[in-house]
Image (tube, rainbow, N blue to C red; front, side):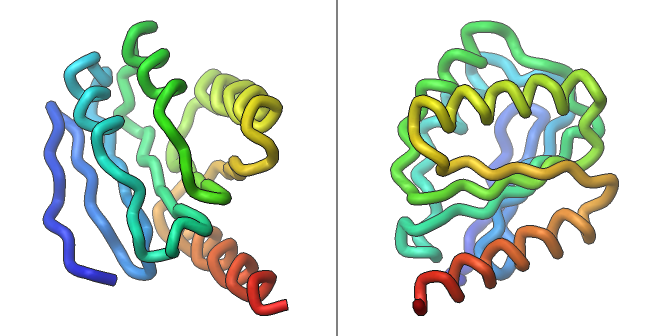
Length: 140
């Protein structure tokens, strides 16, 4: 993986870990300005557009307004599959994410896979397992 500098947007941080995992740490609400920065970022190219791996730390997440939510939902998603691991999501957040993923998969095809975890280690292990499974399927 090529070295990438952390990206600070508002109170939030986006860092990159091996093997090509984007780690989003949210601290408070996501504003429209924060979302503009996020949607302008291209997908990581480590996995050649086949899939993306992302860990979302929701422990201090403070919500997002409807305009920011719409911007995020309309973001182009060119990769084949998006694996998303959520850490510390509340029950309400889990329900919202599950509904969003179901709707996105109806519109885009089965390209969004998500799971919820209590800690970064478990989330990262799941993402690595998804990566290995995806790579093994590509070899067939």
